[in-house]
Image (cartoon, rainbow over all chains, first blue to last red):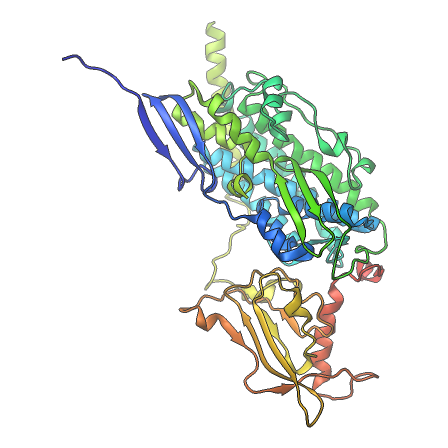
Length: 371
Length: 185
């Protein structure tokens, strides 16, 4: 009798602390090295698209918060824009500014959570508490703006529900003044830490062609060195009025398109969001924030597709109206779902411990995968 | 070769101490956490902003029985029964229930309310032992609906309630309206 080795099938999730929600992987491993990791999605499917057909255009807005609860402002904005395009409604300029301000704050909050959990997933607990602290301050600001900390329901069809409260602008600027030095502190704490860099560099390398083939969007695509940002390339809202750069991966610590590049893109994007916010808060015009939209909103029959650059990339909102008060079909295209597709390919030959790094670097959010 | 090896060690050590310096600086900073729930100087509920969307409450004294909130609710967690009293020809509210267990605190009901009767409070601690006890019944016995007077309100009992309600309603952006004063105030 001879000693033989065999492939081991492991189960990771759905309740695993580092899979960022209920997400399951079936791992075929040879010792510590994975043959493949098969993502098994669907544990958080809540038929949000079907719900839209039952609750109507206005009533669906709070449900969009649940599509991606980490950056709910973008899902709000996507749905609002889809309805506005269907109904031919123009949002007042101040309303658009309020949307951009809320959304960019939300982008910083989302990236902070992503950066913090990235550290926690590979074993660094301290950065998480630091990142959460700054995110908490943004939550406080948004709470004052719209009354909720996570499921905002801030935007309405035709604008936003609440104007900026008195004195909020000064508080927001004070936060940005506090945030910019803290950004350098994060970098000193983790980004340039040798152990951290070693864990992330050369892990999960994606080339630009591959990223496009697998339909990656947002920071995952930009991390491969491909410059594609909906805010710049297909401008919406009032983004053309702001001056900002689109950070891309440079491969400064390892190969271009590795986990470290994706991480650095998020870190740099926070700086750019801060720049946009300063401009937006400075040049916000006076005027109404909400267009007149009938409570019984019935757009003409037709369909539309909206693209929004959310914190997790190009988010698509497809809505079909048949002329009644309820949408005929709604579909959401999210960045996390696309990112799940490439995990199987990237996991081949990777260590099991690096799978966690890979998931964290793709920044997937379970409700966004399944809706 | 050897310089690269030792350079890596030097990099690792300096970058670790850089991180530790950040951590150490927090020893002299003010802590950001609070000892919820019992060791906070002020109740958390009192520190929350005015727009905070907590547990719903209804002021029946100023409820007009218009059913706008019931229609706006996307999950039908509000049930109102209004009938016309044949003798006095006034609207009689006999039931106003809100299922707090079902409510998702979206705020769509308080937006169309004309008087601010239904509004979110800053209360958020709603844990209870049964789902039945989560249903808030606001009408102990049938009550006549509030009828807005043509001029300013004269009933001294209603005035403070209505003022509070209108302040809540005015927080919401008016469609097409302009509120430049709110920014400067």
